[in-house]
Length: 233
Ligand SMILES: [Zn+2]
Image (cartoon, rainbow, N blue to C red):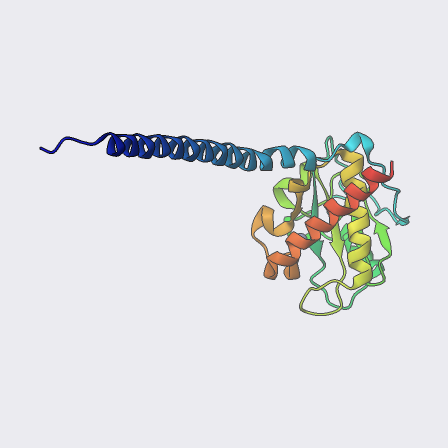
């Protein structure tokens, strides 16, 4: 085998040094890349913490509510204490074009019916087509609206102009205000703002069941409302 000349040896040495340096740089780049990825992937949990609402900072003014409590009766206002409020349940009246007063009177008329399951129906609040709010049952008593969640939730019925079940802008606006007010008052997390559908799979409130993206948007609107109030202090 031919002996390597001095010049060739030097050349090989140079090549080895360059290769070594290149490997070191590559390793460094990989290390930096891993650190950056770790940093990015740890961000969502930090973000989630920031997103949690601090209810001690939130004050939501009470919406205008007209109290028209039902007469105590076995069917629509049993007078059973509601010991804790852990959620808010949204409903639609399923009676297109009727206003809040008519629906309140319907609940009241249940007092003349026999003491049977089919006649047991009511709700704490009803929001009319014009956004006005009627309260039928005090917040510390149960309503017959949300089946197994009657015992730990407050119910809100919403009027709607047509069969689609979509609320008017005014009804929607009052609903956002009322739900935000109740969330702040009882420190209810957004996951516990639910549809009647989430309890029983009943198609109620129809529009929010048929359009889950609108339901998500509604919950987002509540969160935005509460965050805005938190920043106002
Ligand atoms: Zn319902």
